[in-house]
Length: 478
Ligand code: SIN
Image (cartoon, rainbow, N blue to C red; front, side, top):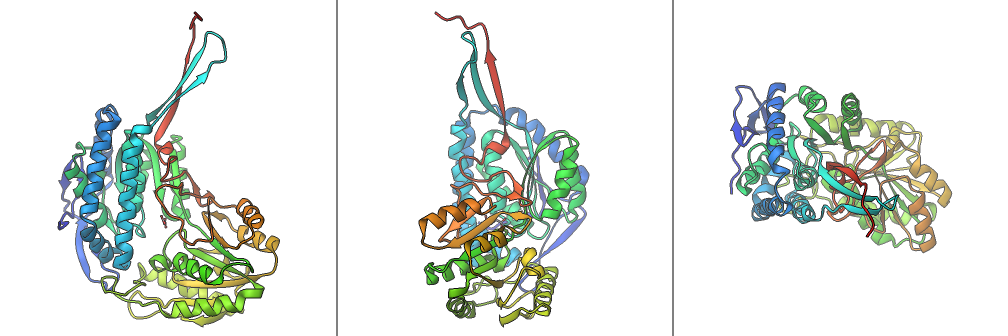
């Protein structure tokens, strides 16, 4: 199927706007679409429609909601190729990765279609002989979902599928850089049979007004955001006046630790997977690679050899594994981090420069240390920064020396050390002898300034429900 809509999707209608904004392909900066530029009033209308739709959507049986979600899932799977092509064109990631993202995104819909029917409550032994206690979970209401450009498909489904499964309705504000994948999901949602107002998409160039409407409109009961820590803090502040329920999946500064007993080849592979996915533009990408002094040379030699094989280019071309970065600012930031590191004594062993367009050469930088900006900031680019360490205590201290707490990784064989290190790392997710941790079935999320709330897994619906406890008195014993 060919996805054609460039309008916003509000209350089951495709809404054209006089004002539009351009979406470009980061590979060659060509314009691929002009998309409806919604304003605050459009957001208000969408929220009201979602509020109206909530009154009946929440009353459907879980089985009925589940059936529509399953249909939406099937349509996504039938259209993997078209969705992936669209994603690559607007975001730049290689087609194989884009296909992976579409399947990953769809898996949340399938999972929560199933979970819809398992939104169990509890019966708790009462605190008096005449008392009985029951607990139910109720859909929270209208959800505002604000989603990023780096995963234009999966970050929508990961939020929206549990919300819809629980009985909530949604107003989604996708990134202005990648709205087409969101509109394609809306096209499929329409075909799947979601009633008008249950699923709404507000596309816009300037997110500030829409973000403010979502966070301050009293009909919105929950905000779910994936993006930068700076914007997350702003949305949290804006939501505070109404004490709105919020979940935030923000930046990371993932350590990747290689102990001296690790399987070095496996660690190199894990590091490549975690570092260079989406050209380094994921929140869970490895940011600081800590290698035990004893194996540093072998590890960096092997890592360097692998990095050399990475092929840059148009994501639509066969064999390309590193696409363009999303915009000029991302390139500038990567360059500045490297400049700072080199000025303080780091050595660029491979890459280190930008190429034509929005490409940045996969880079290996060694002799890095904690005084450098690259230690403290999320790189969000294809740069592998290698530190060395000597003791477990030292590396734990270094790994935790950041305000972020999303993902961490380490490789080693000693099971006692594995437990100790896993427990000591101040992160929401820890990969042990693996660089790939993202899956539908596990709770994705961070601690510290990386945010709160969990997406995916059996915990993923918790953020979209209110827990209500009912105390039954006067229950006479027989
Ligand atoms: C992200 O970068 O925010 C999400 C990455 C993932 O789900 O693996």
